Length: 72
Image 1 (cartoon, rainbow, N blue to C red):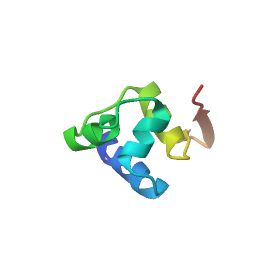
Image 2 (image 1 turned 90 degrees about the vertical axis):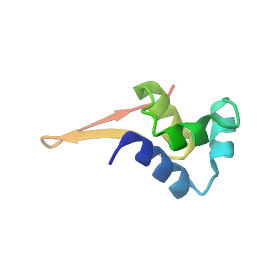
Image 3 (image 1 turned 30 degrees about the vertical axis):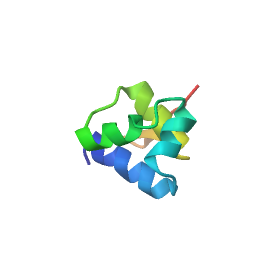
């Protein structure tokens, strides 16, 4: 899945709209919707922030290991 599509899915699964997620992040009301509509690839820290605002965490998995990237 592409990063822009993942952002759209995070927002949809959260039950919040893009405006609510943007506000929770302290960004402009259009930030998340513009990220989705442009198909932008957010920086890793921004992606983690979007995930956290949607109630998710970013986890990297491989070779029987797991790393969770936390939003601070």
